Length: 617
Image (tube, rainbow, N blue to C red; front, side, top):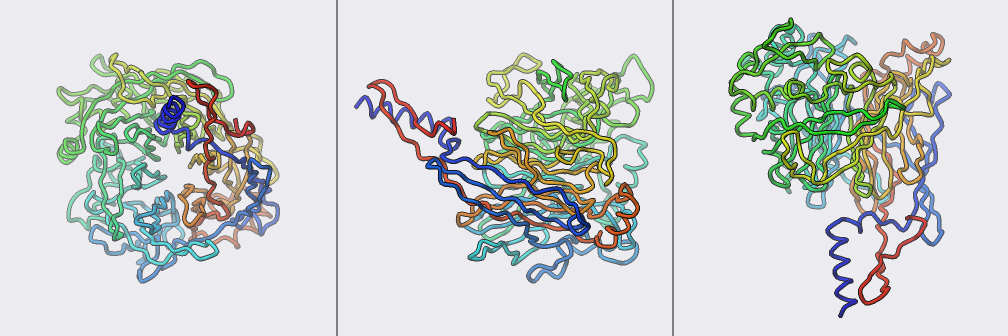
């Protein structure tokens, strides 16, 4: 009875703490895809990598990877009369550019492959319109998301069989949807990377964008409001394939790259793209419900400046609120209702900087702290003393086994450099090609108000895991070493593969890459190379479909900024690239690797032990 009781106790411990999902009876490695050399390779998206799986018994299997185009932005799927990348107005009608041609995005970004009632669905963001039909830079407005129903062949190939636009009119449309994540309750967390729609009076770019949305999306039936954008939308799919969308005002407003929900189903970290940005953490009141909660901003307390730096983190309380309260405020408030401000120093105002434009001097108006915290999160974080010097904070991923959060910092520049921030919390040397940071979690952490943070996933420290390597321009136009990451963007950690996947959005690599970093072997391996100028986006390692898994991987803006190439090579490459075509695709060849079966060995009547392969320990 004693042995059985301790066995049950151990199994309960394993269930509570997730150990069963982190034990592996196998080892995995990826082989490298060499960097492109020929003109054909430089103008293609391809892989020559293999996944090598070694079982506990010593048996090895090799799984060749293959890049597959699921559909392009110009394809019409099923009975959809419009291309996948088509943009729509508030009534669901297709939009046209100033040349009378359909507005079709060349920038597919965030993906979520979700299994609903045994059916696979793919949600795909179209981030922005890069070029209009005359190859001119497009003026952006409201973007789109596509819902694609998939099927799987016997060989494991995915096929797009039906597709439609996701109606976002109930939330005023979606503006610059960038990377995405998937919640533990099987929904899609989108993003709004709101760089330019600023409520601050006097911004010409913001005024133009407001006019664009009012005209192109709302058809002048109502005026666009800045406080309706820069939020985290959540999309759910029901058993009939119907979608519902809500924007989470309670998670704050910023230039969100993505939001990531941690295993407790209530702690969320938000990647905030752009220069002079804060690191934000949201803790929901209830697990599985992001509609209300508390917002915090981090302060970087630097401990080292070497190799991208390290720091301890303290968390500053910003406020607690709900979608319902904030949505009402967003419909009526203006910037001047929330703040008084000046462009010059003043005894009544605090100097802050949350963008590359000149500093601003702000004070919160009476009884407007809640509105400031959630509708002007970046500026309020700065006023509260949080660090607003992070630069190009992109994707997030979580390694449950190591209890570590990863953040991609696309470029260590601007506010992260010494003497560049107002408060100068971060004082690092420039690494234009960026870094991946690892954040270690703690429990029982108190905030700036000496109150306990209701989460066991509070980041207490931050250190570099991988950095890029800047170089002088080589013979092919690269300004970052091609065997190192450059400007990391999307990242995704997969527990089965014990691998952090890293997508690039780089102007320093002529051909961007998708990397696999083994957290066990500390090894970085290139597994995909993209068409010259294209960004790697849409990263997700899918759930299993009939024992097969897929690495979702899109390409966008093919052929951008090829002027960095030597002229002879540029003249060869440019005619071979269609700048108006982008791919929604995936890497196949990934098997569903089952976790190790746990064997319980009795040491004595009061002690139990888990036995698993020592090569995995």
